[in-house]
Length: 180
Image (cartoon, rainbow, N blue to C red; front, side, top):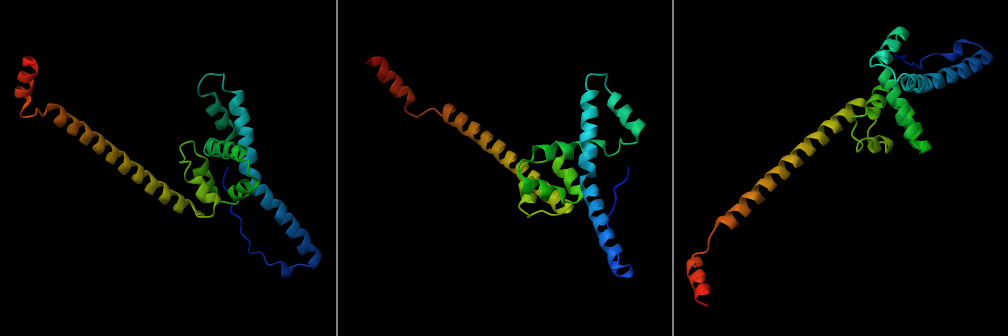
């Protein structure tokens, strides 16, 4: 199945007013179908996946192949599952109005949960911006991890130095304690 690109460049002035009105209504219906297509398909695929979960591995993939759906099946399922978890109606609406590539990124199981709120707040509106922020966040997390490791190593070294450093008057104190 291929993604459908919506174009809004039809000139309704070339048809009668009545026809233009009916075409606009049909266009709105199509837009709704396009918007809900991957969610509906994702729901069906999710049900099939659950149905086949108890069978040997690979049977769901075989079923997808038989339907010609293997290429985007998991994207559709992930979108469906994310949408089911969105309780806020405005977040659902915002999510459904995002480009499909951004919806796929947001709904991946590996997606960073810190990024999705930025989409819902309107700070991120493109797949490219999402990936850029994802990369920056990952780099920041890696730097923080390296700093934590360095700090931990430094603390261990400092503790070793403190433990291994014997005071100069240790022997004198030890002798004094034994005399007492």
